[in-house]
Every structure is written in C-alpha cells, then in structure tokens.
Image 1 (spheres, rainbow, N blue to C red):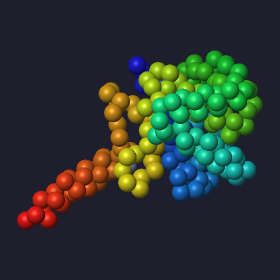
Image 2 (cartoon, rainbow, N blue to C red):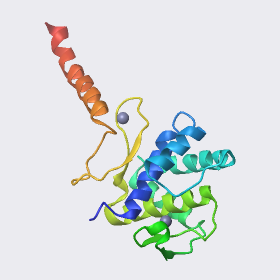
Image 3 (cartoon, rainbow, N blue to C red):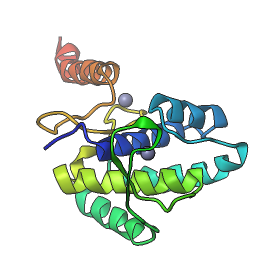
Image 4 (cartoon, rainbow, N blue to C red):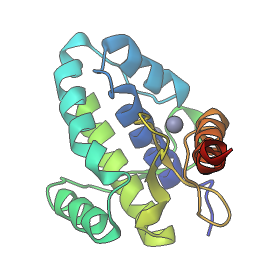
Length: 177
Ligand SMILES: [Zn+2]
Ligand SMILES: [Zn+2]
C-alpha cells in the first residue's frame, strides 16, 4: 500500500475540512485548509455555505462502522459528475483531475474529497478513516500508520486518555487502602 499518493492527500484535505468545521467552519479556517495543502483553489465568501454543507456531508465518513462508511461513500460517489483528466498545469507533475473543467471551488473540493476517501477505503479499508478516541475530541484523520491501528488525533490526546485510563485502574485500589 502506498500512502504518499495524491488520492491520500485528497483524503487528508477531507479530514482537515471536517476537523476545521467541528466548531463551525469560518472563511479563515477554510482558507487555512486550502493553504495547508497548497491547493490551487480560490475561496470566495460565497463559497462558505457550500463548504459548510460539504463538511457536514463528509463528517460521518470518519469514525463510523465499516459497512456504514463503505455504503455512505458509495452513495455519494453515485452523485458525482466525474470527468477524469490527466493534467500538468502550473508546472506540476502529471496528476489526475476528476472534476469537470471549470468546476467551482466547492465542487472541486467535493469531488476530490470523495474520490480520495474512496481510494483510501479501496486501498486500505474503511477503518483508515478515523475519529479521535479521546473524550471530547472530534478531530478526524486518515490513518496512514503501518499497522492501521491509530486511535488518536495526536500524542496529546493519546497521553491524556492513557493517563485517565491509568487513573481509572488505580481507583479501586486507592479506595481499598
Ligand atoms: Zn491540479
Ligand atoms: Zn484528539
């Protein structure tokens, strides 16, 4: 399995968009995602409503049971207007564009997010689209770890959870003492 592929990057964009929208997506946060991944997309204030709807649509595709993830992504793929092109625009290496030429920013984000998520699922399985297991954390991620057993968005969330689990195990002993 190769996880440095363009489709993985598109899936990472989807995860970043969902994560940016967890407390309500702002124009600045949307532009932050575009900049983080150096996407050749222009964002207008008019794009925000569509991006919010897209983030809502993508949210349940992370951290759900395998069958539900597969069915939900497949349902959404059926709604896409996909016109694959091989392109070298702006001096970039040859890469695939899936959206029709001239598609608007939100359409491009949607097509590429869903194609990227579908490719990750097809390559590595639906469990690769995860949601942080730490209490109160809604951050989602694409699990690119070797063994595919990632549970947390960050070391901070892993440590916080492990400390809490450790304390929970200690408590009965402390009560007895
Ligand atoms: Zn391109
Ligand atoms: Zn987390």
